[in-house]
Length: 432
Ligand code: 4AD
Image: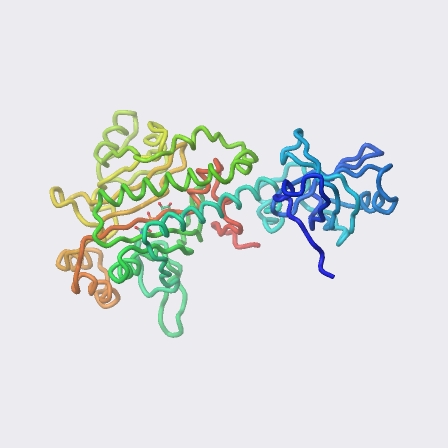
């Protein structure tokens, strides 16, 4: 007979009733006559109380055998308890052991980062890591909802590609039978083709960059959301981005209060994230940096300290717009009034989390695109299909890419992106 199981997150529906939960022992303490079991089932955590004088001897004994991460079915009565975090407690009537866990490698004591990373497959069971992954899932839900409500279609660009999108320095090379291929750096070029077919599209997929940089913001494999929109100009692109990011933050606040609490996130900072966001031009940013003691020349790209210094001026994300054409990707449209800069923007998150979005209006003029191919020494044959988009009914269009992990790091208030993805791929880390 199949067992009727309840989930910890739903115990409020069974107040004063009896439930059975499939779970793991997170922690235990005992006063001799009472055992307090901290249980987790993935949906939440709950304290279960086993009182020696009130349960059968075998139940008391089974509870006594449980080690950290042992798996069990627990049966008990749901009691409202204002002292507990979940608001409920379980008075145990039955314990059925599934497996007594071997000595668990992650104990409540402190562990070093490398040790935890080697045990990532177990580390994700901890309340903190669980909270992060729950928030990540909510962010993904919010992203899909935002685009679905606005008439966008989800399109999946390829992962194996014959050419680059964001320069050739960090491509992952592989063989594709007799040809050379690369893991995708960005689906953008394909999304441009899709926008000409479906109008407004977005992709959500893995992205690979062989970055030899070991920073708290860089992953080798990360997930990017890339919307692309026909007939949308630079200014409209920014408006969509600020609404998009505000809606993600507000959705997390609405659905993940408990998880934010576990992470001790200062939610008053997140509550301020409402569109519109401030905008400054690259020129203004350079002037600000120079006035504030940074050695910085017009034409250089910003590093993390520069982005942080600029972002510190604001409580919401800030757009830095119109970067020098020279330092940006080949596909960005030059400002018609000032072709030395392009109609692009990076969105910099507050609190030092750095760039979370890169976007731009795209070149729609075939002649200029030809020129760019020559300047960037890109093979015309490889990009022939991309040129076709400028030949057959070219239209103004724009898009952007949001880095999921940097967004999770910011919303969760984490020091490093390694905690934002279930199994991070970092420089020299491919295990587990
Ligand atoms: O600014 P990027 O390189 O933009 C593009 O790839 C465009 N083709 C997007 C587009 O317009 N469709 O990357 C976009 C975002 C960055 O703002 C950052 O959030 C994230 O992707 N990102 C990374 N996240 C983690 N680790 C890395 N190594 C990242 N590189 C970029």
